[in-house]
Amino acid sequence: MEEKKIVLTGDRPTGKLHIGHYFGSIQNRLKLQEQYETYILIADVQALTDNFNNPEKVRTAIKELAKDYLSCGIDPEKCTIYIQSMIPEIAELTVFFSNLVTVARLERNPTVKTEIAQKKELFGNNGESITYGFLGYPVSQAADIAVFNAELIPVGEDQLPMIEQTREIVRKFNSMYGDTLVEPEALVGKFPRIKGLDGNEKMGKSLGNAIFLSDSEEEIQKKVMGAVTDTSKIKKDDPANPEICMVGYYHKLFSNDSCKEVFAECRKGERGCVQCKKQLAKNIAEYLRPIREKRAYYDNNPEVIDKILIDGTNRARKKAKETMEKIKKNMRINYFVNE
Image (cartoon, rainbow, N blue to C red; front, top):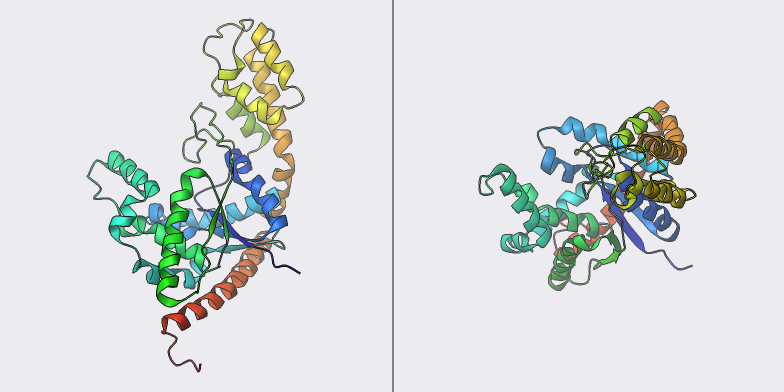
């Protein structure tokens, strides 16, 4: 029987997942877990690069993230869900990899370059707030991937520079120490970016424009009632353009059966915004109901979450240790081991 290829993906634990995550990545992972040996990384070390002064936030978010995964259908029998900081081999390989990449190369990474520019603009101190950990996170990310010999990494096009950096580091390592590590490939897909309720191009945990997978029906309705609509519609019977209305935008996602009717009525002025929002909120709540109900089980049984994370982390640690033994042997630093 042919072995399944290894896929690695994951998230930073900085809060609960929202519908942008669901459509943008979770749905894809549900397919991947049926086709590949899938590792899902809860990247708490990477989250600490921005939250090093608030570790409790990261600690709490780890279990919330795990609950969201499982509630959406991520299967721990098919996937290995693990916590990054509990795999010391990742940190060890990060140190080894750090000798294979220059600071100049890290600063040229388009993804890092963009984020550094954003930080300079935000803090206005010519980059003095940039930490070694932040600048070096592509090296850590390379170690995340390589220590599991992951072959495929699902990414959007904006993340391709990160995967290319990993490939460069792995190639350099292999050229110096022999054929040791797998050079990963990017599994590029069209991962939709879901807009926020305020019309922002990105729905974000910290932007106040997100519908979380765990939101109650009441929370969903309250949020939807505040969604941005076509500003040209003043009175209830005024015609409007649903294509520039966030309510219309979400109807496309959650109201497939009635979307055409909703849009037609909106354009004719036969539908008021309040009525439209209430229907949308009901549709979203119904769509998310199975996720919400499954999550309630994990809320009431926290020991189940603990066991899944411990088991997954133990499996991941075993895999990482095997890779690290090969790495140290080829680097000639496996001291006191009988060859």
